[in-house]
Length: 132
Image 1 (spheres, rainbow, N blue to C red):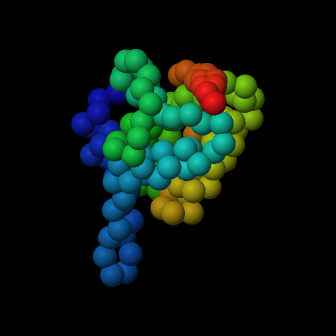
Image 2 (spheres, one colour; image 1 turned 135 degrees about the vertical axis):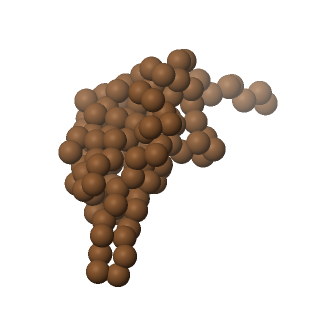
Image 3 (cartoon, one colour; image 1 turned 30 degrees about the vertical axis):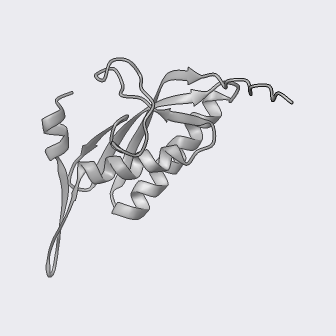
């Protein structure tokens, strides 16, 4: 994966009054937010290229998502960290559906594939006992 090439890709649609261009960063941000909305997702991972999985705040919304955009379609790779105790298969399927529908409705691009890569699992810390 060459990051500079990935971020330059964009979708261009010619209309009667001009063109509409959607940068891959926009698609990646939409996909990241859609994935984070699914219950059971603890965070996004930097993926194989990012090295060690790291939890993300809202600083870099495209981290953990790789997007390939062509003229009218896109393929999305999502790198996730899930919460312990959830059904990984169910959560992954929900992420696929949510990302696909959100990206298609917001951009008009056809989403060929949403590939999920579970990079880690987060264990909930037990609540500290309250001293009285």
